[in-house]
Length: 484
Image 1 (cartoon, rainbow, N blue to C red):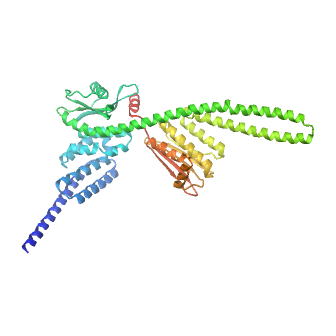
Image 2 (cartoon, rainbow, N blue to C red):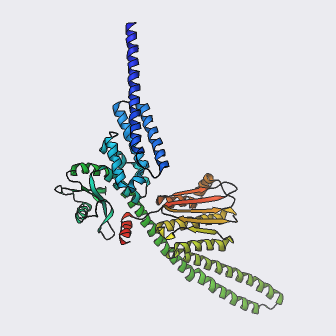
Image 3 (cartoon, rainbow, N blue to C red):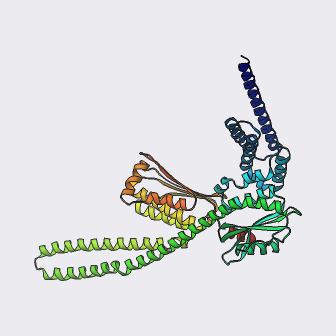
């Protein structure tokens, strides 16, 4: 009985200790939340949503793994990083507030500054942002955690000149920072003798995509180096993504230029070959008709032969008209991108109207010049493919084309009131027959990092939606900003 009583008392003490630990962990979590609540957030709703998510994540971790000191510290770290990730846009716009918040998290909540920086600077969510936004966010967060005077990102432009892509912190990019970046981009290492400047190359092994350069506060060089090391991997991944997008854009332009040359040659071949042959054949037929009618004596047979030859002449005329129409369309397609996007889009719509007697309702909203060349190519091809499907399959009587551009990117929709279709079986049948137009729509958008959605059902309507983020290569954007 005594043994049983001891066991019961031990179990009770364990439960009591566990409850106390859990209570202490929740108290620490509440103290962490108060640090964030003390900030004056512009987007209050965003903050409340971030607090709800962070609290749920931390409590789930505590319930699953217990409330010992290590687990509690990890839960607080994860919660703080989730908070910071959700409000990163406000913190990026206010570096002083971000630095103050990092101080409070270290001194009030007891979180290791470097450990928290590691969670924030290596967040995979950065890869979901536009490269320019991700770089700006990363440098702002680096400045918030590290004892730096300034931080800058450098890359080579098309002329192989070192260019400052982004600079945050005190002053302007210095000549010494540029020289260090130049050495790093050339594959050299940073000189250890410099007291304040330090840097790392980013990106591919033995082929840097960029250089991250920081200017440390006096006596803080070694500490700053640890933070730069934490920021480098995700910055490198962001730059790899930017390079991939740039490569896709270049490939798309090369493909279109090649296609334009082929289309131009095809147009000339049609004009100088079959069209001329049909014209000559028509002249020969008319000459043969006159000769044959003269040779035939019977008026009745003469009238019958004339009628038959007139039919053949009419068929040749129709063939000549169709060949010339194809030649004109080929020529129009070959020079499509040598005109403004709005005009090219309206030409596509007019060509569709000429063949179907359905005039599409075209709505354009925003500054169309913000659409990059590769995005224009993709949008025009997708709209053309969608209209082709409408013409061939939908029996539609109304078609709408809407393109909207803003600071975030471009959205486009093609809507028809046709009979619609079941998407999945249609895609399967089309693939089996080698008709890959719908698949090509998705692939074009995917290569540009966007989204393409096709919504349809039997009875209609059918809606093709495209969303592309605004994109400009980082170096090119930096040059445009400096020029302005």
